[in-house]
Image 1 (cartoon, helix red, strand yellow):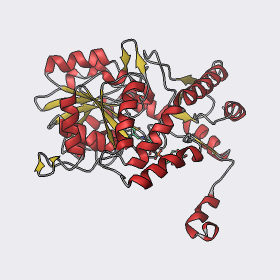
Image 2 (cartoon, rainbow, N blue to C red; image 1 turned 135 degrees about the horizontal axis):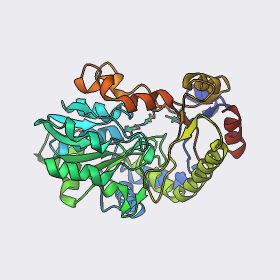
Image 3 (cartoon, rainbow, N blue to C red; image 1 turned 180 degrees about the vertical axis):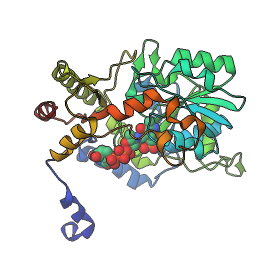
Image 4 (tube, rainbow, N blue to C red; image 1 turned 90 degrees about the vertical axis):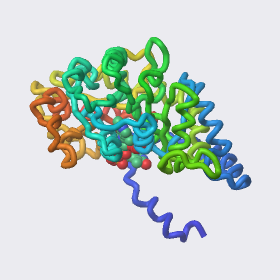
Length: 379
Ligand code: T4K
């Protein structure tokens, strides 16, 4: 019956020789079947079931955080985090990110105020934040871009001086640690992504890291329509819940995480060694983390490289290597944002330059050494 199922014909459309910027690592399908059997047997599919609870507990241990609320994805997590802290008015953020960062602000009727990035970490430049603060500013939303930590102490000190909240878009920062422990413990809230393209994936998924149980409880109300109990709705909440299917997969994914990280680390090292002597190609360096997650491998194609960034990009595509220009265009260049005063290119020279130089090379645990070498030869 399965062979004649038209829905399965889609599998034939795959292009096996293509190298993508990323590929998810999945557990052995046979290992997932017992989890599915439990779900089928219990008929608990969602609304904070047993796998959901186990995954929250295990993530706290693995990540070194105290309180976590799972989500259907990071974007709903960001939208909810802003609601939970009652953020309004203006929020300072980076233009050098995936569009979801600023979209979460617009979905809450908040005005994003773009501030330029640091040329080394590619994260929000703390020295440029203060001059963007107005009486309407209520928070800062930085991104740990590519999993490299922001200057968390400088950002917190500005936030403390001006009474601002800090919500980290930590979509790229699963497992990243600095000297004091998890980078996710900084700020008022941090929001993770477990999307298919991330180092830890539950197909779709995300989580908010909270400082205390009371905040987590409010977030749990908000992600469940605002229900506090069967008859009490305390806020105009949303449906941001993670299903039992995704949570069960997450439990299995955690078992293979260290091995995946080790493979990513080896690929990162191979790229760095291979690119060390190449004129005009700059690798983005770590920004203070003691444990990296090797989520991305961005390179900057500089003017002394023989090809332009876009010519090199095209060369990759012509060779069936699907590198990506994360993050080009800048968020501030999209139609919803480009009319904002802070989106003016003159105020964002570093972000503009980096977005015109960047290419993210393929990196994922199953990428083979010979494929990395092919990519290096093309460069
Ligand atoms: N904040 C930041 C800083 C983010 O980077 C993101 C997401 C978010 C927030 C929001 O998180 P979520 O709400 O998604 O949890 C991808 C992802 O869709 C997006 O999640 C991610 N950032 C962004 C950086 O990259 P695209 O449009 O580049 O995805 P796509 O479909 O072109 O995938 C890239 C490659 O990955 C494909 O060429 C092949 C591979 N792939 C992808 C998918 C979806 C697979 O092998 N399997 C798959 O299922 O945005």
